[in-house]
Length: 287
Image (tube, rainbow, N blue to C red; front, side, top):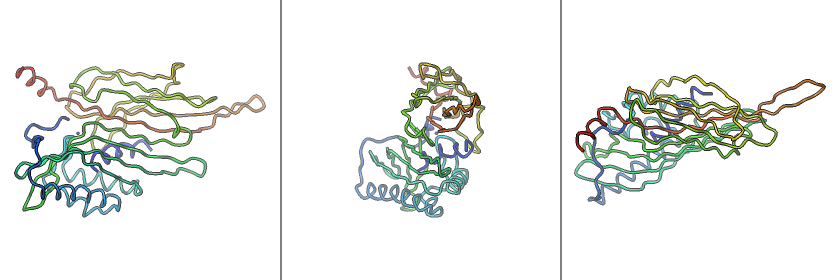
C-alpha cells in the first residue's frame, strides 16, 4: 500500500526517482511455485493489515533496510503511515497482482493498487477519496521469509473531491516521466455545472516527507475549460506531484446584493517521475 499512502500524505497538508540500478532487476520467469504463493500471501496480508490499520503487522512485512524509489527509509515510511491512519482511518485498500518474477532470494512483483474512502465534511457536503497506482515491489528472502525491500511507482493518480466536484469529469495531464531540470506542461480540464463559477490552480510539489505545500494561485477557469501551466522539473532528482485545486461557487442575488456559496471543491493529483541527470548522461554514453 506504499504508493497509495505516499500520495495521500500530500493531502494532509491540503485540508518514487527512477529505481536505483543496484536494486533487483525484473526477471521474466517465475521459478518457484512455493515462493510465488508466499509472495502473494505477503502482499495480500499487507492489504488486510492496512484495512484493519494494524500498524505493527503491516510494518513487519518490510525489511528493516527498506528504502523506496522516493528515498523514504523504513523509519520515514512508518511515520508517514501513522500520520495518514490517524487522519484517515477508514480508507479501504485493494491490490491486483499482475506478475511475479523470482530468482534465487530476490523477486519483483508488478501490481495495481487502489484505495477508496468516504470523507464527510458536513451535513451538506460529503467527500470521496479515490486513488490508484501502477507499481513494482522488490522483495528479498531473509531468514526464509519474504520481505519488501523496496518499491517503485510507475504511475499514480489520486482525487479528493467534495460536493458538486464529485460528479466532475476531471482530466489532469502531465508527463509520467521527465528528465531533471526540464520544462514540461501540465493541463487541467473539466466542465463546471451550469450557472457555476469555477476557479482552479495547478501547482508542483516534490515527493518528500514532511510534505511542503506549494503556493496556490487560483484563476477563473478559461472559457474553453482548460487551464495550463509550465513547470521546470527539479534538479534535486526528486519525484514530483502535480496538484490541481478546484473550487465551485454559485451566486445568489437578492435585493441587489450578491452572495457567493461554495458548492464544491477538491484536489486532483498525478505523479511525475524525475529521471536523475546522471542517469540521462550514462544512457547517452551507452548509446
